[in-house]
Amino acid sequence: MNDDQLLRYSRHILLDEIGIEGQERLLAAHALLIGAGGLGSPAALFLASAGVGRITLVDADTVDLTNLQRQIAHTTARVGQPKVASAAEALHAVNPQVRVDAMPLRADAAWLDAHVPTADVVLDCSDNYATRQAVNAACVRHGVPLVAGAAIRFDGQITVVQPALPDAPCYACLFPPDADFEEVRCSTMGVFSPMVGIIGAMQAAEALKLLAGVGTPLAGRLLMLDGLAMEWTSMRARRDPACPVCGAGHSGHPAPVGEVLPG
Image (cartoon, rainbow, N blue to C red; front, top):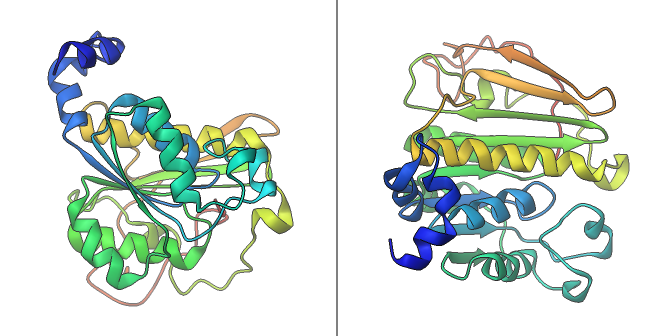
């Protein structure tokens, strides 16, 4: 690290758990974020400020006035711009040393198979169930850790998928891909603006822990937040042997352990 970096990241370096070696791991890391909206905004900003060397942002949407109540990477002046371009501008304003790859597209299975293996960690900040399942499946196939978050109304949830851990469940173990439910979105149900900030910041924290090799990740646990009562519920789970994504079988899915929330 040069003198500017030693000063910029000094508060991380002061932490015994991170230090210079941990910060250098962050500088050399690549984080892939699926979604640059409510969850992706705080997650990406914290990753950039922490010095993650390369951040890839993937989102097909453009900035809308209704986004600005909660999507803090965007501004009124950037309404109409692609979200990834707007977010990249925000990240570079915070930390011009970070490489930001802006991908204005919807990530399908083929794209994920090509790009997930290049990442050290993936953050699922998307807002729909099909994308979450596709991202989870790609991360399991390629052995890349995944931090999955979601928020709607006053509720939030977050978990970590670590394919390398033999007993840790994947997202499909918790929420079966063929589950029959009515998907809800912020555009119809509303969302308390700090809720996406809380969950998105936690996604960044879990990603940074994974990249720096510190602490205990949320693998095998689903954290759920009731924002009205400000109460957390933690649920533990093990890998489902019958999971169609990470298990040996393709039947006998367990019931979901909680409500599936959009981003």
